[in-house]
Length: 321
Image (cartoon, rainbow, N blue to C red; front, side):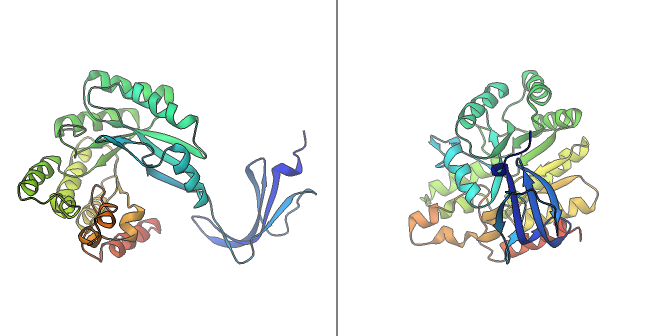
């Protein structure tokens, strides 16, 4: 059956941006699928036209790290799968990758289905899920295989932080890395030393430091860098590709860069906050302003960090390093 004009769209006169080049071209889309890119295209009559002269035409963005309606320390993330993905679409994000995070001792498969039940009825764009490994046993290993073979999950996240809740020790993390390697799945890590963070937090609280500034003080750069190096070493010992989520400091970024040069299969993930602002906000006189910048790992007080991370990102994306 011939496609109706409502399902035919021509984006005309824009500058098309792809990963390999930019070109002045028209884009013809039919039934949601790009059919032609170029000039002087042969287009069926009745096609709806969007004039894009003077504008860039870019692929939809994929946000690989979101937390919609995440339950965390007695709270929930402010955005659910409806408000978060609706806002993302306005900004050009057409797919998100969220995290199903089981509590310690909970079934990974059950956590996956719970996140699916939250998302399927609300989500406004394409989405997929990573699944976190927050404890270790033979059951977890079997469920990782089940998630991969039956539900298409091919990335698992391990936490080196959040002691007594989600943190894995090195021995369990090695087992998780080995399992990812066996299944062809990507291992991800939140790289901060949770034992040091707990020690520092207790020390700061005893001194009466309870404001947002204490968050960064409890987990300075070297705490992130140490865990990043340890994760790279452990993954490399078992030949497991590694993806370090939210690299937030120069020190951690340098380790990822050095390991890549040594031949390790490791990727570092910058995030928008780390590329766009810095940790000087933690000492802002307005508590609400300072608290709004709290994240883990934290933004760094070194104001040169965003530019440093952006430079590394550009070099790796463009293949210069």
